[in-house]
Structure formats: structure tokens, C-alpha cells
View 1 (tube, rainbow, N blue to C red):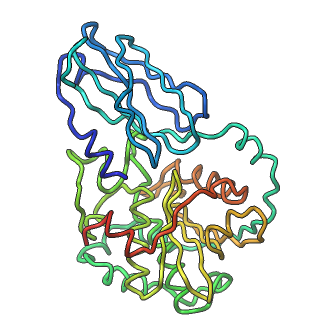
View 2: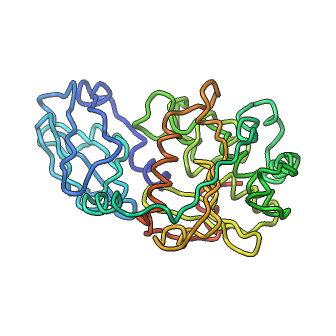
Length: 347
């Protein structure tokens, strides 16, 4: 998905106030179906016209969007899910596009479903907090030197403590200990999203600290990035599981991506982005009925003073647990990790 967005919105052509100098109002993190999203244009040129392009997670860009000379543009979301937005400009009545800029993404909620979710009982999900220093260890940079393959990364995970009594609450098997240690370790690799420009993409391939996006990354490129997003957590955790011989899958919803892994005779849901493991596959986690255990590990991204500390992680953890428990995120695709990786990684 990221590559497709970049293919459309990589080039910004300078054109007085209509191009490089144009600025837009910040996008909200979330909104609702039917509620207009207002985008205010600053420094816009009177002899230019503008339009906002939008697409859903599985849809196409609306290239037939209407051009307007107004400096306040609106988009009315028609369905729940992730909505991607971009802006274009041209000379009034002209044919040549002078500005082609990606604006960001907004999570669109169905207002009825959102209200209903608040009234549903969440007691079917048992949350167990497991204190650990594994995530904090990963946030340091010294160990990353020379770790340029998933196999070497898996060796680092194997060297982590395996006799922690707290981990035994979740699993005692060799595969289970590796998988849950890997989840914790991957959770501490990056600052989640951009440090400053939080409204735009903040991934290893595209973030505020790069002069240009990277279309193709090697394994060590991920480890050397200070910033990561859900796709990056999924790639590295899945690669570690694969190197250890543990079968894994990728769960992709409209707004999030994470892993499933098979050990202890069943599928588990592993979300390294938020440092939480569920002892069931995602369709069971979100069925709204089954009793499920959730193991919430210490996360470097939530610890003040950590170099990967991010306010967004703590908020995202709470949101994802509520969404999972209420059964809202039931619309997803499931793909074997090795098949999914072909489209997103080059190593």
C-alpha cells in the first residue's frame, strides 16, 4: 500500500504559492462517516485551482474529483476504514498539474458502531501485565552493528533470558518463549511514527528524517531506522519467526498490520507495535464471544526517558485492546508471511 501511495505522491513541483509554498491545515486522527473533512489552504494563489484526492484502503484514487478555486476544500467520507488524502493544484482552467502532494490518512469510524462498541462488555478479555526489560534492551543501538539478516537477528533473540518466571505464565515451550521474546524485542526497535510531523507517514521507508523515501530496504535498513510503523514491526517480527522455523501469518485490517504465530498447538496473535500477545488467532480475538487472554509486556515506547518513547504508543495500546475486545476490527485479510513479504520487502 505504501508503495502505491508513493508512486502517486512523490513529486512536488514548485510553482509560486500554488506549489512548494502551499500549506494545509492538519488532518484529524479520526473522523466519522458522513462528517465533512475540511482542508484549509494557506498561501494559496488566486489564479490557481485545487482539488483533494481520496482513496480507501482497498479502493482507487478519485481522479474525477472536482477542481475548485476555493481555499477551503471538503471531503465527505462515505465508508468506515482508513482514508488516504492528497492534494493537487493547477493554473485555473489549465491541464498541467503543478502540485501533487500526499496529505496523510484519517481513520473513519461508523458513528453507530462506535457508540455500540462503548456499550459492549469487555470482560471476556483477560489482560495480564508482564514486566520485562526486553523491549528496553532492544531500544539501545549498540547491539545492532553487524545484524544484517533475519537469522542473525534471531540469534540475538535466542540470547535473551529464557528462564523468566513471568514469561512462564504465558508459555514454557521453546517456540513460545522465542516468539514472545521476539515480540518484546521488536517492540523496542523504533520510535513509533514521526517525532514531530505526526500527521504524515512515519515508517522506516518514509519518515521526516529522510530526504527522500526508500523504495527497497535491506534487513539492516530496518534496524538502522530511528522511526517505524506497524508494517515495520510486522516485517521484522515475521522475519525472526521465519528464521526460527515458526510458522507465521500476517493480519491486515483497514488501519493496522500485525502477526499471527503458531506455537503451543495453536495460533497466537502477536502485535509487536503495541507489545501485546493474544493466546488465540485474530478471528477468535475479535469474535466478541470467546474468552481470550492478552499478555501486555513492558514497552520501551511507553517509558519516559526512553529514546523510543512516544505518546502515541500508550494511546494506541488502549485503543487496540478496546477495539479487539469489542469485536470491531473483524474485517481483515490473512496471508502467509512468506507470501506477504514478497510485496513489501527485498531481503
